Figure: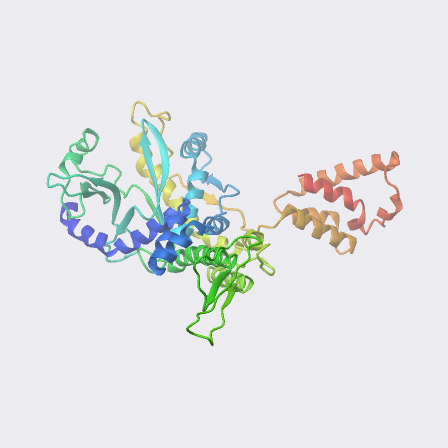
Length: 492
């Protein structure tokens, strides 16, 4: 079936995913820093007009989303190794060329962020002025469709939302680019082909064909059951709720700072409030039983209990996202910011990151297969393309990620090793192996030799006040020179 005949299905899919696209757009706005707009919108909906005016200047748009996503998206923090199954120099050179041209590790790190933010994204290689580039498309501006009867999780149609264009009728049209493995069409949200776009020289030259014979992108989807993953509504809701709860405290603290003054049976005319002022109250002569009275009400808010609520909700939310939150301690007004920051800094995401690796191993395999076998054979024939050679037929590129370990504070890790050595349950070699698990034996040997040499010189110069306290038998290597070894390790 021709793509033009499928446009009705594309339009139906667009309408079906409209709510998800809006949800993802809000997440993207907040991730990019615009939390305030969304918090104000929620507060305006739930507060009276007067209360909203009072609360608006005291909104605290504390954005935890960026920190949480950043903590989850670390699988490219240490670049993976990409290997070619055939050791042909031209293939190695071409791979190095594409890695640099694509800026592949930084772009894929962004894809990793969007993968955790939306649960899906599209990675798209393209050509710009004869140079290969790579970009990641956020999930608020594309959607996919599958008509595959065997594997409904395999996209057969890829649609990018390009923005709005005017029409002769004066109404805005949403411009969309839809690709199948064989065709390309520019159309609007009603499924009508946009002729002025199709008439552009670069597009008209293709005659509606997709020259690559494949969808020109790699779809990364976290769901194992849905082509377009269901929304994580908790992510958006909790991000806004934390800022709203803190803003509520600011709003309450404003009124807690001022007392409400009231009067009973007073003739309020002529009363002035000023320092050292004397006020004389008169009762109503027609009411002899009345007793004039003035007083004040001081509002009180249990701020610490609200902070404890924020702490508990953050902790539960993180655990629901397969994150082990760090210790916040007892949150108070004084340590609120540091407590929340500490919890995020210390949270353990290694288990979740290890699960993410399998998705990106597959994504990179698809990406390099697309480039090597579909795109490069067309690109390298263009006169302005830099690398005008072909890959060896059948070549495959495999990506290997390092093990995803818990990210720990280096000072604390070194302090822990010092403690183990002082208790004689750890050796210097063991400490270095745990501090630097990626080091080879030769690197560890070299470091121990350097430290031993420096320690010997220091002892010879009389710089150690009590050399014997670091002397142990040959079988107790763990205690020898423990301080310099760890200090040297810390410098590394």
